[in-house]
Length: 264
Image 1 (cartoon, rainbow, N blue to C red):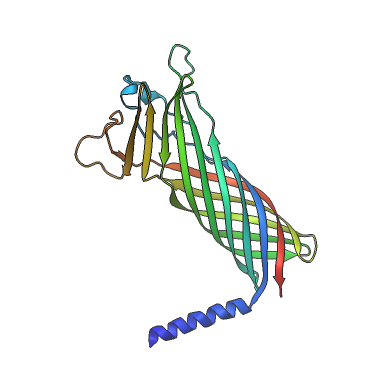
Image 2: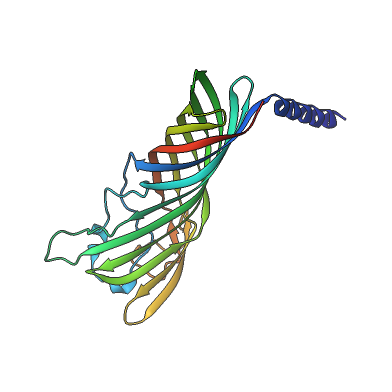
């Protein structure tokens, strides 16, 4: 009986919140994300017997990032009478890291990597607005979910020698931002936003193709701990690898048009 009363109370609270709603709007937007930090490029797989010297240890980029890129999406904003609100944004983000030459010494073999990353972004945010005349300042905070996929190719002096494709997975982080609205008409507003976002991409599995005289393929499972045989990054038959991650720490700038579907 107590549970039924609790459910009824929550239902009435939700109905009351809906009845108190002031505006419902949609906002198509474009955001540009710019990295505020870099990291050492993760290895993620071995080239196997193709690389028979320890040069592979030296080919990691110390200024690696995939945080730079554009996002396109749409957000639905639901605002209450007291200027509190909730917003649900859904977007598409993509980033590419052009081939990076790890060795500038012309006497050494040049290794390059070519990354391609994309994700579906979901942001359920809480917001609070302060309005003055035609202007409104809206602070936002909440979690961010990325359903991401990534792959990268390795080159030796323009010779394509491997592909690594990761499984798609969800990543969780947080987002905080500020939006400025300027009222163009009763229904249309110009929206400019600025914010910070942080999350990490840690794949669970990968499929690797190594191109030599023949094409060899193997799968990798990324785990927190290796049990059994000693881990070796040069062993192509090593099915379990220690987990690595790609960090996303970025600020974003964006612009959009907000359209009021309903205003009470």
